[in-house]
Length: 321
Ligand code: DGY
Image (cartoon, rainbow, N blue to C red; front, side, top):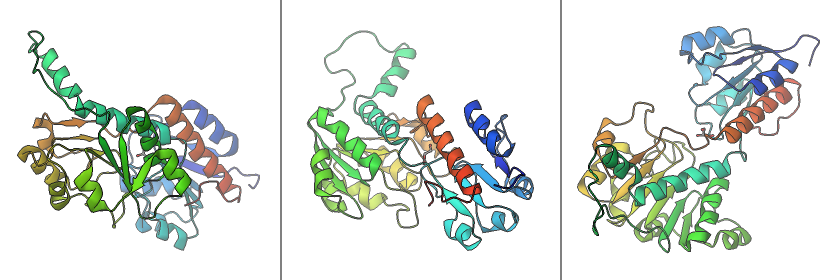
């Protein structure tokens, strides 16, 4: 880095320790009030910046990059980077980074929370208790389905998919997975998981968990036709990205009983989710909190900061995408 510290823009509120680290290396424009930038305001703020630390709520595209002539690096505080046009960054010589690894276990835990919560109807019955509807124990009261010994199908067997599979060992589940590429045999053994086609996975699984990144290829990977392939007793979990599921088709399937239920952490057009979800009891809704534990979010922000500083020092950042 030159004697002049590079100037970086941090688009959202971050932890104090993240800002301290950044300030040791850079001049920092922070946003601790956490007021999201509109696209024009972001472009104006970025015009004289060398680095950008952003979140999945910020769109980094060719139009923005054209208005940021000094920009050398973009550090996303997320493992997913579908908010960043990577080819456009590459074309302008801007490095883009993400935060893989540090959020795998927390995100896998949340997928499990959604599985268990949907299977045992936790949010529905809690609403009923709060509404004063619980009048006493009954044998056939609010029956759920078992997770243990059921068949779990994981679509997308990267690090998070594997962490979800490893947790299934304790529940003695049969684990199927589908992935663009088959994973190494020793990883399959560790996860006790069998590779199958997407069709087989959809028709055989009691729980289908989606963990593929969002891209044009995975847009509406699960739509009306795929939901029809699933068992009527099956539960769908989307803990990856909105858009992988056709939410309108999912609403219809949940209403018609095409599948039993769904646990969702992500939505098309979030935070404006399809309002019909709100009226359904057989869906558990979470507000994109997959990685949201204090330790994990701190680790993500710090990793993004380290990536940004490394890139601005002219090094190859550890998580260059
Ligand atoms: C990610 O890292 O992609 C998460 O969705 C952010 O919380």
